[in-house]
Amino acid sequence: MSKPKVLISRRWPASVEAKLLDLYDTTLNQDDHPLSADEFKSALQNYDAVCPSVCDSLPAEVLNVGNKRCKILGNFGVGFNHIDINAARQQGLIVTNTPGVLTQSTADIAMTLLLMSARRGAEGDRLVRAGQWTGWCPTHMMSSDVTGATLGLIGFGRIAQAMARKAHHGFGMKILYFKPSPADQAIVDELQAVRCETLEELLPQCDYVSLHCPGGNDTRHLINENSLRLMKPSAHLINTARGDVVDSKALINTLREKRIAGAGLDVYEGEPNIDPGFLTLDNVSLLPHLGSATIATRTAMGEKVLENLAAFFNGQALPDRVV
Ligand code: DGY
Image 1 (spheres, protein in one colour):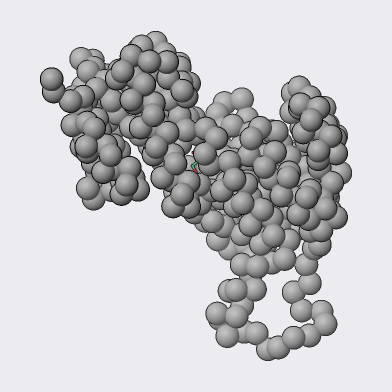
Image 2 (spheres, protein in one colour):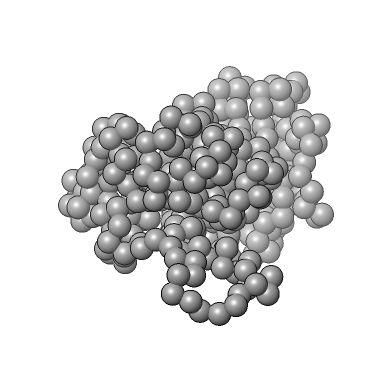
């Protein structure tokens, strides 16, 4: 019997690609170029499974292509706001994702950005490299304390909870969170976490605000001019969730006018195109969507896709079915 045909949209860790080549009639993206809409349409017509990643865009216009052979999108990533889920559902396409395995690495990047922003790490690095450091002095590059400060989490799922653990147990931070319903009592007790029922209640109390909600229409520009005005002038905003949760223009104006102390960003509206306004500011730390970028995590994400494909082709229940 011929093997199912599988298309992988970008390069994946070598060990996972080797398993895919062994198990399926797999097409890899040898030169790792971003696939165009036409290439995705053709993939949907010619493969049993298509495996996109969070950098790919799969709107209805692509998913609705006629004569589809594809039955499953095995997404390499936990976020799926780049896939039109309603269109996938209407087209009878199964979508799976990779939850659970990138929790710690993404929370680590959130904590990295929090520390970079608080202690002006990227700015200090730039200064040293530019040969502009003239030596230690008592008032040079003073910054904000992290230990004992208050961290507000917007969203309180797996990654937010991992961030809260690092912050609370590692840095003695006080934890506030904003989520529609109360979190499990065990986690609340462990972290002595306090729930805020509104953003208006949470934002003015925080020294650091870290975003951990999903992207998409429901959270688009949740952080905007009005919400930024509720933050303390000494506060920092950290975004490792999705770029469109923050109104970039409003954040750039806020940072330019120093209405908050800093921001640390791993994700951007319209990434990889970054609003050039950010590049002119010293009080923002910018990373290129590195949240899950450890060898172990990216390999585990690939293994998750393999598990979902195996379940699908063996007619079993899918471990990580989104739709
Ligand atoms: C995801 O999986 O959604 C992440 O953003 C990738 O790092």
